[in-house]
Amino acid sequence: MPIRTTDQIMHKAAWLYYSHGLRQDEVAQQLGISRASVATYLRRARELGIVTISTSTELFTDDVLARELEDATGVSSVWIVPEDRYALDPAAEMPVVAASVFLSLIRKGDRVGVAWGRTVYHIADVMPFADLQDVTVVQLCGNLGAPYSYRPDQCTTEIARRLNAQGINIYAPLVLSSERLAEELRSEPVIREQLATISNCQLALYSVGGIEADSHLVKCGALSPEDMALMGEKGAAGVIAGQLIDGDGQWMDCAHNRRCISADLTSITTIEKRLMVVQEDEKFEPLVAAIRGGFASHLIVTTSMARRLLKRWNKG
Image (cartoon, rainbow, N blue to C red; front, side):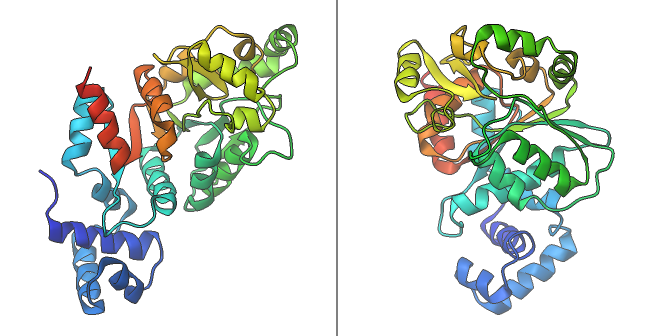
């Protein structure tokens, strides 16, 4: 059963006030209700225990569309960021929701794998501070050049700092100049051990990249726009942890992937909880491929993206 309209407003008021830090008058303005009503909703939320992070995310899960998408795709849990008149800009809402869900999925002693990109970087930037000293945060793929924003080591280090957890970075480039050099580096004991232990993670946090001319792999210089276009013609549909996947979410046997220092994609799919966060509309086809490949057990998307996914799966 979806939560009722009045309950939705109560949850939203609590979410805006406690998670986004808006004042009561700002919450009232956002929801189109009086400040007195906001105070009443917040008091009621405290009485019901809704103000905790774990229950605040109920606002984004107790939805018929989320249940339908879970049934259609086989994804275990779906959170949907709304785009209605009560919603904030999804660009601001998505990282906060993702950070809250991410924290709720972590358990004592967990090993957590983190990828890279703008989405993960923004999640790290809004991650609440916690004391999880028995948690380890590991990097899922090699690093990029210093001038590039949203580097893998930045994402891993910042999330580990926010959680007061141990952070383990892979101090090797994401893409090597030759396949031989990449193979030799993967054989180095330190790198080999780091990549091998990724399958021991209990949780992974990442997004899926696109193959457009301005994608991360092109911007960081790993592939030229022409090479990326050629890979698209050969069937590439998206990027997971720096590696190209095809339309069925399978690793592509290509020169770029063979030159990568990154987790084996099969080992990623064996991680119990795989939290994928996708906001941009242009990532629809990459997301379809990622779901087909088993890269998402937990998914956070916008309402419009959820509807597009459901329509695709209903068409078979």
